[in-house]
Length: 428
Image: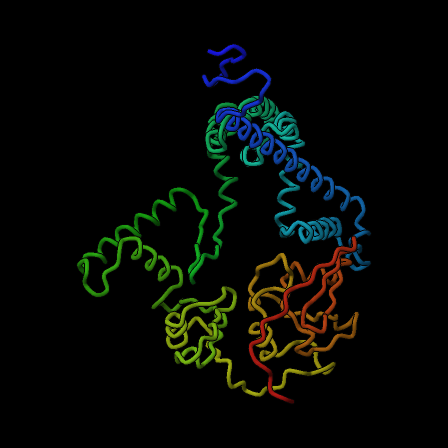
């Protein structure tokens, strides 16, 4: 080795007085940067949780900030104020009021029941995923002694394991320290059973069901047995052959929708079909209200056969008058159909409720604002949005473009997207 040279940690020579970054140095630097970024993100999540929990407490302590006199007179005024505060925060954070409320609730549970884990979260040494897993497991606990032991032990492992490993260990720990019987825990969990839909791409959707494990096993076994029998009726490559997965999906749809039975589904969502598109002479999109664009073949099948869909062609209109000024309060069937066709969803930017499944509401209130029952004053608004509009200080203003400006009691304003123009209504 030449005089003045030394050997680096990686075994490469470096000259005294110079700073030469090796591959190892750069790798370590990137690892450190990622670690610092993760810690910063953890601390930021902790601040968000703390802020939202405090916001909910302040809203309950100061309901007059969020509520009109009509809302203040309600027995559930504090809950309405809390919901409006969650909506206010959601508009700023691009979250729904339910999501904000859920985070605030989780933060309060963490603060009240898992203080040691919360300290680790605030310090940035554990992630929001770890914290959520622990909060989920302590919901409904009544044994404070077991809870304290659980908190200490999960906090110790929350900074050294992945979320999936942590969740499994925390679940096993819960089984060891909790005195509550498995039967009692199942009874509480069973109360949360539900079914919900999740949109997927390309005209598809996921249907989720949270049910008791024995019921889930029974359902899958029946699907498997019936699918096996059906699959034996055709061979691979023959017309009409379906895979086992396809058969299970088709069977589940048929059973749940009641196809071929007297109790078949009666729901009638709108299918908006430009006639030229259906004939293949136009590239205008075909819209399934509450979902979005679907392909021409699916639309043609629904338009011709499906009894559970209301089939509406965009042209011609039937000419029924849609304007009534102040002569009536309740919208007509034609006006409700017009609103469902004009809007895809509730006008609340944090809500994805399909327009056809929302209330048809007067933007300018019938009594308070002397609003008219006309198509330019009728908008789809979900039940929660309707309640906020009537009882809280959230203000709605129609704009010339057809958009709606929504201003919260704290002065934050958002503007909805302009409604989809389906066609010009006939002159009256």
